[in-house]
Image (tube, rainbow, N blue to C red):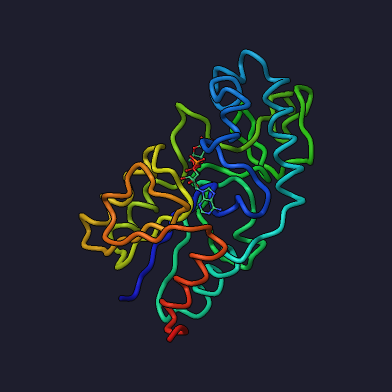
Length: 232
Ligand code: OAD
């Protein structure tokens, strides 16, 4: 077994204090996703959408990686093959925990995107409807995050990785949002073994060869130790 492809979701950052989306009290229970996570919502009320992402950017910048983020960075460092991390998370906690080459398929809070010309730049801490694009100067800055109805980033690269994976692991994701929820089937079709690590069974748990349930800060370091042969 050489190549490991890992998909992460909001559950891996939950113990760093960043809310998940669909759990009780999750982000989508407080803010309708149609209002803050769709191009139509942004067109309707850009002030609200900027405020929502400004708050999340500030919160993510203050958050610290937890034991699960650190464990995946360790796996990347010590595994004698390739470890690719694909995340749906828009925080930077994998990188803060030491991971490298993380594929942010849903974009990142650290990025700004011009809704007019498509230029990308490093987001200031807060943006509003007057924030100009440094390339075209129009006040059309938006967060560089993927909204519902938009195509996730790096899909060709991700499917290439899944096609050559020996092991696919999904961590802290509810399995309710496609295309990410379909990665397990893609990996299985390519002959990879599959494992789910989550607080509780996801919507697609039955598609995995193995499942381990519990908080990410416990189950992920344990799994990494097992992978590296560090547990009796
Ligand atoms: P969800 O909120 O849908 O799911 C979070 C998952 O993490 C659930 O299955 C929880 O059981 C699990 N979980 C919660 N706390 C945990 C912990 N301490 N340890 C391990 N697991 C835990 O979040 P995602 O699956 O990431 O997209 O959601 C996928 C996408 O939907 C997001 O990227 C976002 C959202 O709408 C966009 O905004 C485009």
